[in-house]
Image (cartoon, rainbow, N blue to C red):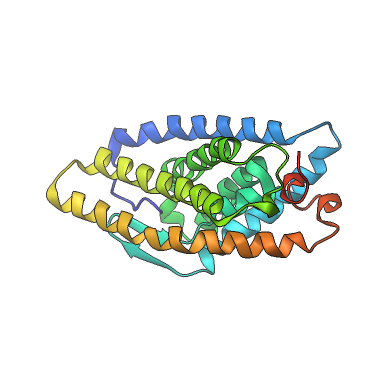
Length: 226
C-alpha cells in the first residue's frame, strides 16, 4: 500500500502532514483507552515492540508486489488489533513503516505522512466497528468467521480507499489513473480473503495459551472478556 514517489507532488504533499497529525491523534486516543493505570504502561510498551516487529516483517518478509498505483502488502491490520489492541497496533504500524523506510526504502520517506495515514485511520475504524459487532463480555478468541471478515474488510477497505484518495488527489481522474486504482483495489481483495483465516488461526492458538492474560504481551481482551 505504499504511495509511490511522484503520485503526489509539490505543495499537494503538505496535506499529508495534516492527515498524519490527525492519524497520530487517533492513535494516541486508542493508546490512552488501552491504559488502565500506570501498571498497564509497561505492557502497552511490550505489545508495541512486538507489533512493530510484526509490521516490519510484514513489509520485508511477506510477499509484496506492485499493482497499479501502489504495492500490495500483507499488512494484517485486524490481526494486529485483535492480538495487541488498537493502541499498540497503531504504534507498531507507525514505527514498523518508519523503520522499513529508514533502512530499506529511503525513497518512501517523503511519502511517510500519506502511508502512515493510510495505515492508521483504517485501524481506528476497526476499533469503532469492533465495539458495534463484538458484544461486551466477549473475548476475541470467541469470535466467529463473520466477525473477523468484517474487521478485515473494514481495515483493508480503508487502506484501498486512502490509496485511491491519494492517487486521485495527486494525479486526477484520467482513464489510466482510474484503471490503475481499480487494479490495485481488485488485487487487495486477496488480502481480505486471507486475513480472516489468519485471524481465526491466531485466535485459536491464543485460546490454548493459559498464561496469555497475565503475560502482558497481548491485549487482555484477547482471552478475557471485559
